[in-house]
Structures are given as C-alpha cells and as structure tokens.
Amino acid sequence: MSKAEARARAKERRKLAFESDRRLGGPALEAATDRLLALIDTMPDGAVSGYMPIHSEIDPRPAMTALHWAGRPVCVPVVEGKGKPLHFHRWTPEAETIKGPFGAQVPADPDPVTPRILVAPMLAFDARGTRLGYGGGFYDRTLSRLRAADPATRAVGFAFAAQEAKSLPAEQTDARLDALVTEAETLLWPSTSM
Image (cartoon, rainbow, N blue to C red; front, side, top):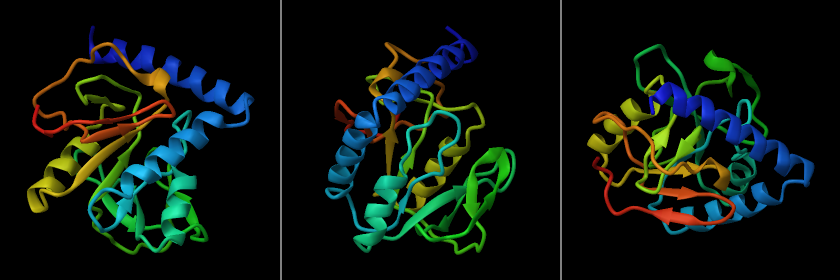
C-alpha cells in the first residue's frame, strides 16, 4: 500500500473515532489524557511540546493545561517553511493565538523553547512505532535535529486506538516514536532507529 492510500484510509478511521468520542462526551479523550500525563511524569524533565489540534486530531490541550499548571514548560510547534524543521514557541492556556501555516493556531507572541518531549499528532501508527503524518516531513526533520543535539529527546504519539494500522509504509528518513498513548494503552519502544 502506498503512503497516499494509507493516509486516505487513516484519515477516515481517525474522523470516525473523533466523531464517535465527541458524541459520547469525550471518554476516549479523557482516558488518553490521563495516560499521557502519567507517561510524561516518568520522562526527562524539560519542556513538553504539544500541538494545537486541527481537523479530527485528538486534542492534547487538556494535558498541556495540566502540565502548565504543574509548572512544566509547554510549547507548540510553529512551521517556519516548507522543508524546514519545526520551531517551538511557549504556550500557556491564556496565550493569545493566531492562525499559522496549515491552519494550526500558534502563539501571537513568539517565545522560543526547545522541547525534550514532543507529543506528536498523526493519521495512523503501527505496532513498530511507525507514525504516519501528513507527508510534509516536519516531525521527521525536527526529531532528527533535536535527537542529534540531545539524545534524551523523546517523541510520544498521541492518537485514538482506532488509528492503529496493521502495518504502515516507512522510509529510512521516517523518525520512529519512543512511545504512543491512546485511550486504551501506552506503548513503549526501546529504540528510535528504523
């Protein structure tokens, strides 16, 4: 299966999971948020990058808010341009945001931060720690740069359980996840190499 086919199928599965959880009042989001906070509590100190959700992405803002009030620095990714790694700006629950590239909100007042933990959105994941994104390679380039500077940098996928695929196409440049959190489970992988 090509990545384009995998993305089309994954987008539909994610949308169905998102809509179902919303109709039920958010029990999957609540359970996934609890799992995410428990996992981050076991990880290295330092800033955590969440993201501002678009489309049917699972919403990390409840976890980001809890981390902020617990005193942990929180930031969100900012796209600087096609083919470039992401940059990160400090986020607080009260921060004014503006629409950034690709439709995601970004802080109106840039305050650069380097995260040690990246909570990553996705279309799909598999049991090997492969993450299927939108195809821009932003997280792959960013993780490569951050891990080269600080090997303790961790990538945590955040998704609905329904986003799991049996197998996903992967390339040598695809950065694997260190962990993944859904409403049903927390998965950990020992290595970030493909």
